[in-house]
Length: 98
Image (cartoon, rainbow, N blue to C red; front, side):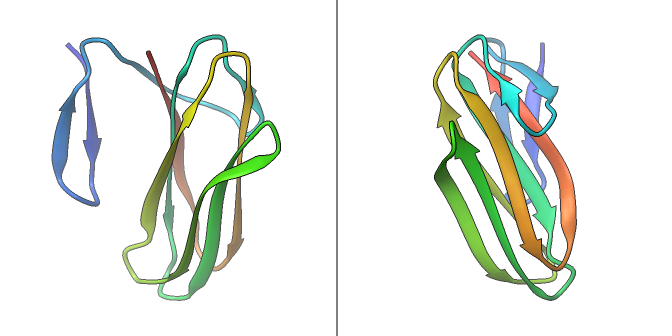
């Protein structure tokens, strides 16, 4: 049994139907799923976003010591990428495949 843990909200999502794995920036999906990116802002301003086939589908702007997590549905056959501007860095970029 697999599961996905979000450190931001401390919840467990049962993932018996999910295949969760790390993906590179610019990943081409074979199946539909959800892209999840977590970043740490380091106490400064940041602008994080997820793009699907070049269209921004999820975005989080602002600054906090905790950073944030953003996610978006990604249809099969699309290319998913992320961008992060400002302070901090990407902690992980994962794909939860249906």
